[in-house]
Image (tube, rainbow, N blue to C red; front, side, top):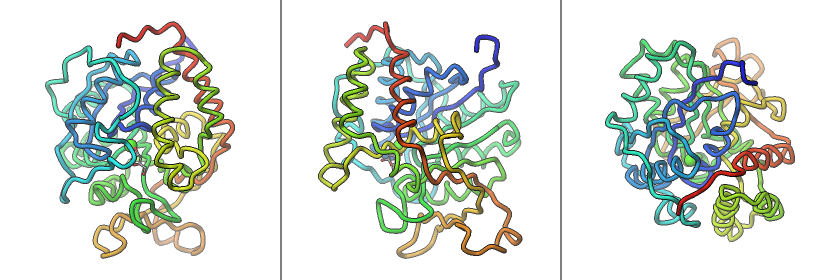
Length: 322
Ligand code: BDR
Ligand code: CA
């Protein structure tokens, strides 16, 4: 792969255990080059997710700048998800302290700079609310053509998780999500339809732990923590949402992906944050509404886990200073 040009990427998220694992995978892909890491509030406040992003960068050896996002959603009040990710937003194993200063630019300005300076289209992996991405599209519409794909974890065509109709990332900032889906930029959506099937079972945690390097140990301990609340909720494994945004982009062959038109509900009393997709029940609707997203609906779970194990193996020899 040495002479294959890498795809420039921005990691935008709210780490968060599953964001952290998504970034762990992206960082060792020989097809991706991380140009920036940007943070958004969601799993915890943006202060906490930014600190976590910097600790993850130190753990994984990510040297791209890390920039802090807007303090809250475009129009609504901030929400957090401490039930799933703990008080820090990334509870569980001890992590190294940040080893680089926070970027002086804010998230949106850093994203704009990366896009402006890139010769090739940039892919954005958005694994939190889409606040930063939407703010970028609104402030710099001229840069849209520099974005190759926005691959998001968010939404659900068939159901929600935070409320019956809406998934957390979209519910945090529905106006931002609508801006992204309506932007005309290619969007790939990994919603709950697929991410709830990407279950990592306790026996898979052991496979990861037995890889035996420092990063694999920490990934296994993140999974141990993430499993606690999911076990209480009756899950047999941890639904590893965010890594699907990266893996479905890199390995579409292990996924079932369908083109659809997706609208985001921004005003419903019970349905705010709902991603309404034409799931194929209204055959002619595609004539009226152009498809605006590649929606990922299913995954080969075992291959997904194998790719996760392969990724952590690539950290053999990495020293982690705790
Ligand atoms: C999404 O919400 C967050 O808690 C996770 O990190 C994931 O991005 C799942 O609904
Ligand atoms: Ca996330």
